[in-house]
Length: 275
Length: 225
Image (cartoon, rainbow over all chains, first blue to last red; front, side):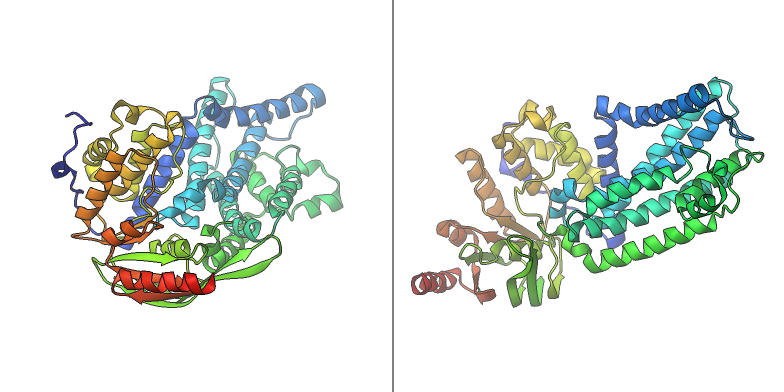
């Protein structure tokens, strides 16, 4: 059929059934997820960075730990120690930053009534989890080929630890989208806050080596609990920080998610307004 | 059926100073199914805001809006396309969003035909001229069966022939659907719309005949100018 040949007869719109609210939401999520996947994965060179970024981080830390300092973490292979730290923390950081920046570039999508700010944040969160799982599988397969001990003793607790950090990231994203919309300059402050959070989360140095008063202060950081739990579940002989409790990051996650959902319910409609 | 009950809308204005800027106040109206309505008023009288509230793009600050039926997005509105992907891939997202998954190819052929993009349909969006982009946006708008079509101006950078086709198509849709239009063009409003909404001083006034709405509008222009 010649596409330039136009007659009105063949242009009647296809009839489509009325959808229930739940179907609309599910189909919106499906469409957004596929769009997000296309955005993230079909970008050629940029997509490669999704994998190169954790590898780059890992290589630097590995270099510092093995070549410069020559120190060993007790009870665990140093490469695996670094990998678990970076990947679990990435679940928090990626979900939060992606979710926080989900609204502005996608503002044009709000012309569709079915897309709400919450959908964009949720989908970015799921996308981030999905990508991190794939990256984890790739990196651990690579480590396996290098004959590193990649079999964890307690896989379920690793999943639980990762999930706690992801949940904090999601709750924080819901909260910060509202905060950055109403408070000018808030985005900058949050980016600044991410740095100390990263340093004290136990990803880049073994917190157990810190002297006593500071070691207990650092336990305030919920990300540390998630990261150290994952390591402890990986290798039972690993000497982590005393006082790690997985219930703590989950409590923080619950607080953030409730706060975030409340804020979205109350102020979320302003996000669709023109800035 | 679209029912506005005591709807008000304000925006938060940041510049030059922080303040609430009220656009609509206490607007109550009912648009019945299959009704064609033109929205008229001075610029900055809140026409676009009213349309966005109808479309569900923005929320009312006070009051309640009830909608029965499927309401389109503004016809030909700029959609945040992915520049790296082709027109076809971008269209697929919109079809999925509208729940047309099971008839994906049918929709795609229809959009391809209406847009008259031929082989450009498979080229990335960043290579599109404004003209091609407008055609794709219009084809996407007209691909779906709706109970209400809405449009914020019908001036698109497309050829006269394409414009005629679009107008013809909208006219046909009006047999089964309602239409809500904002336009500067008086004749355009009169050809498409029967009823009229006149926006004046944050209030909306309903007229069953659009001529009457224009009468009030012109009168207000002469008095307050």
